[in-house]
Structure formats: structure tokens, C-alpha cells
Image 1 (cartoon, rainbow over the protein chains, first blue to last red):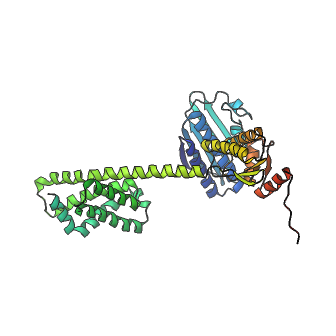
Image 2 (spheres, rainbow over the protein chains, first blue to last red):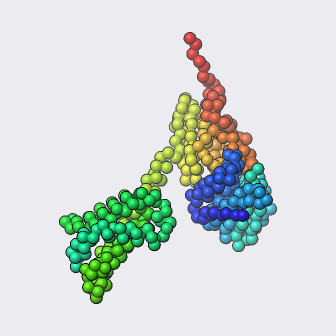
Image 3 (cartoon, rainbow over the protein chains, first blue to last red):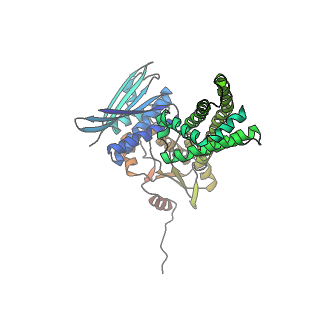
Length: 133
Length: 275
């Protein structure tokens, strides 16, 4: 069972909208304040990556229910330049924009499941899930 | 022809209003009506109808001025713009239908009347959309200004100690202001220690952290120390998860502890008076 809601990321303020959406869904699903903060931070990172590197894209929030386990999945989609070396961006401290380089590896640590799919020239598809305990 | 229409509207006012409301609620996009509670729709739609009528009767004033006051009034009703435009369009149809129904106009001149009504209403909807757009633009720019005003003040709380409370989302524009105000303030207030309070920052992601770290480094360059206060427990956990290194910072959970520490660093402390 999945219910999806999406936010288009076109400018910096859309990141805030995506975050707000994620926080509301997380609250509804019954996540605690710490997990809410983790989820919103992860959304913030992924949405900002879309804004910074792809220019535009979509950030969707799924409500999951698998075998009685409830969860929230963040899906970040863009048709940007893609990531040439995924292993590299998952290393701490690697950044092409002069940032901290903690974004993607950070998101992996903030969430329970993390999957990244990217082809240069085609775009990037990142999915990260947090399960309700 | 114009007078004939207004006279007819005057005579059949209640009936027209009822028919108009019905048209507006029945076949219209349900979403538009849904946003508005029924009683509000009920009262404001009567008002809207009154404004249209009043405008028809009011012949003394200049056309331009009339248009302006009409759209101002309509915008003040607070309807979604789609509904207002629909309301005007439906008004034309309702009146036309009613005129035909009562046989007030000849069958062969029906088109002519419709055209007249339409021509007469078009400037109204154009003016309304214009006014709506202007209102929005004004609101947005005012809010932008308001936001900028509360962006990032640096407050000298004591000799050598300043505080910068950050409230709300930090975007690139605000981050730039934080940096500027911080450096300007530190120099002009001769601060030794600056406390950046992030109690009111909802999300600390890598970008926010990066900006804060950069600001702290810059403060260090002008010879002061930077302290990060107001780190809520959930923010502390996400910062650890993200793997952000704040070792260079002195951090405390509350402003109170921060101020005490800052006093200590500048060789002072708060003592209770005896007696």
C-alpha cells in the first residue's frame, strides 16, 4: 500500500516546502521528534542536491505499509547530469561544490534503507526509507 | 439597450441572485467551493452580487474609477481568483438567460445583448486579475522585507559578549547576511565572544552547518571566538548522523550555559549580592 505526495523542486524555497511535507507525513505516521528531525534533514539534503546539481526535479514522500510495518520513503528524482562515480560521492568529505561533502553519506546514516541509481546524462533516482519502530 | 438590461436586473434581483448562486455552486469545479466554508460563501457571494449591481447603477463616477473601486472591493472579499472570474462569467450568462426567459429581448437580438454584456464585463475581469496580481506582488515583497528585517541581528548583551539569535529557515541569502552582520558587529561592538543561537532553526543540514562553520572561521580571523548555543537533542543527533565535525566549536545546549561560559572566557562571573 502506497500513498504518494510530491513537491517539484525548482527554487530554494521549494526545499522548505518538501521538508514541510515530509515533516507532516512523519508526524502523521507517528515518528518521534528525533526521527522527524532525521527525515526532514534527509529531505533537505536530497532536495538541495536536486536544486544545486540538477536545477530541477521532484521530491516525493511515500507512506509504506509492508507486513504491518509502517514506514516513510523519500524519493528524489531528477533528469540532471547524473553522478559519474557513485562510490566517490558516498565517501565522507567528497564534494564538487565546495560544501562539506557530508550530504549523501549523511542521508544514508540518517535513514534505514538507502538506494541510489544514477546514469551520467540521464539523471538520478535516490530512494531512502525510514521504518517506524 | 443598456438601460433595459439594468432595469431588468433591478426588477428580478432576488431571482437572479438565486440562479447565479446555483450556477456557481452546481457545475463549478467543486474544489474551488470546497476551500471556502459554506456560510462564508453564502454571505460573501451576496456581497459580490451587490457590488456588481451597485456598479451597474452607479453612473455618476468615471468609468476608470468605478473599475478600480469595484476590483478593490472584490479582492477584499478574499475569494480565490478563479472563483471571482467564474462569478463574473456566470453573472453574464444568468442575466442573459433570464432576459430571454422573460422575453425582455427579441430572439433575433439575443446575440447582440450577449455581446454587450460580455463587452461590459471583460474589463472587470481583466481589472480584477490585475488587482489580484498586484496585491500578491505587494504582499510578497513586503514579506520579503519583513523577513530581511528579522534576518540576523547581532545583539551586544554585555561588554565583549554578543549574541546572534537565528530563527527560521536559513537560505543562501540569509547565510550571507549572517556572515556580514556577524563580522561587522564583532568589529564595531569589540566583541570577544559571539554566541550563535540556533534554537529557532528547524533543520540543520549540511548546508546550514557549512555556513555556520564558515562564519565561525571568519569570526576567528577577526580575533573573536564563536560559540554555538541552543542545540536541541534531536538536532544534536542529526548532526552526528550527518557526520558534521563541530569540534572547532564550543557548543552548549542552552543560551544560559553559553553566557556563563562566555563570561568565564572573558574573566568574569555572575555573583549573588550578599545581604
